[in-house]
Amino acid sequence: MKAIRGILLTCDPAVKQILLALNEQKSFIIEDLDDYHLVIRADDEVAIRRMLEDELEKNTYTLE
Image (tube, rainbow, N blue to C red; front, top):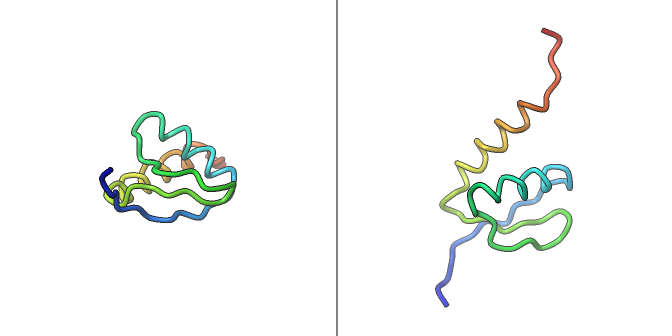
């Protein structure tokens, strides 16, 4: 078995559900620990942050 470098990510359950849905597009989750913690691939951290930011921006209400 090969070791994979990962990052512990702490988030609320709502954000975690978004990340689990995004994981279906690009597999980046190494381990789902509990309701608030995930271990993700360290190499994909920047891309994951951008994907999450884009997804959260879609769900933000604006007055325009």
